[in-house]
Length: 452
Image (cartoon, rainbow, N blue to C red; front, side, top):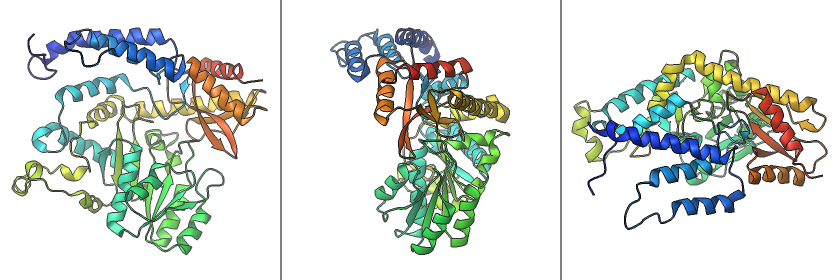
C-alpha cells in the first residue's frame, strides 16, 4: 500500500476531486435517510446507529469506505440548520460560498501563529478585521472562535487595563460566558443588574455604578440568547461615560444587523463601546467558527503580546516580519477569516443586509401567526429573529414535554426559554429560505403534540 495522497501540493486537487464526489453523495444520502430536521429515536437510538456505522475505529487494516460510511452516518444523525423546522438555536445554515472557501482554508492549512506559516492569510486577516471593526466604530479586531471567546477576551483586556479589582457589571439576561469569564480570570463576583423587561435597566445600572466601588466593566447585550433582545445601548453608554466605566457590548447575535439599512439603527450606541463581540456564524451565515472582538483602543491589545523565539524572534520582528502571537491567546489558528472575506466580497453589504432583513421579516410573520392563533400565546413581538411562544392554557410541564416529543421523533427542533416566570418555546429563525407555509406547519405540528 502506497502513501495516502495529500490534499495540498501539485497533485492535491487531483486527489480531492473523487473524494469530494464521495462526500457530496454521502451528504445527500444521509440527509435523505434522516428525512427531517433531526434524527428520530432520541439520544440512545442515534448513538446506536453511529456506533454501528463506526464499527472498529482503529482497525488493523484501513477501510477505503470509511469516508462514505461515516459522512453518511453523520448526515443522517445531524440536526440540520437548513431545514425550516430546525429553529432552536443561534445556529445558522452556512452559505455554500462560505463552506467552499472553508474547504480551501483546510486544504492550504496555514496556521496564523507566525508569518512564515501564513503569509497571505495573515495579510487577509488584517484587511478583514479592520473592515469589520470600522462597521462597529472601532479601530481594529482580533479573530475568535465565537461569542464566548470574544466575551472572555474582552474581560481579560479590561482586567489587564484596570487591574485585578475590576468589577464586571452585567444585566440579568447576559450570556453565561461573561460571569464565567470573571470566574476564570479570578475577578470578584460580578454585579448582576436587574432586567425587568428582559433588557438591562439603565437606572439600576446607574445605581450599581454609584454604590459599588470600581473600576467597572459594564457588559451590555445586543441580541440576548433567550429572546434576541437589545439592551438600551445609548443610555447604557451615557451611564458608563458619566461614571468612567469601561463598556463591552456582546453583539454576537445582533451584529449582523449592521449590514441592514432597515435594521442597523437598532444598534445605535455600539460605537461607544470599548470592545464589541461579533459572531458571524450567527447572523453572518458562516460555518463555525467565525467570531471577532473589536477594540477601540489598539493599545488594549498589547496585553496579548507574547514572545516565543521560534515564532516571533525580536530580530525577525525588527526585520519586518509580522508578529502574529499578539493577535490571539491561541497559538495554532486556522484561517477562518477566508470564508468571511469571500462572503463579504461575494454578497456585499446589500446581499448580507437582505439576508438579515429576510429572517427578521420571517420572525415578524411567525409572531403574527402565533398572535392570531387561538391556540397559542405570544410572549412579545420579536426584536431580531427570535420568537417566544407557548400553547395557550398549557402548563410548563406540557410545554417541556411537547418540545421533547418533537425532538425525539425528529419532527421539529425548538428551543426553550424562561420569561416572566413561565416556560416558553423558542423559535430562532435564521434560515432565509424558510417560507410562510413552513411557519404555519410548525405551529400545526406543535399544536398536535401538546399533551391534553
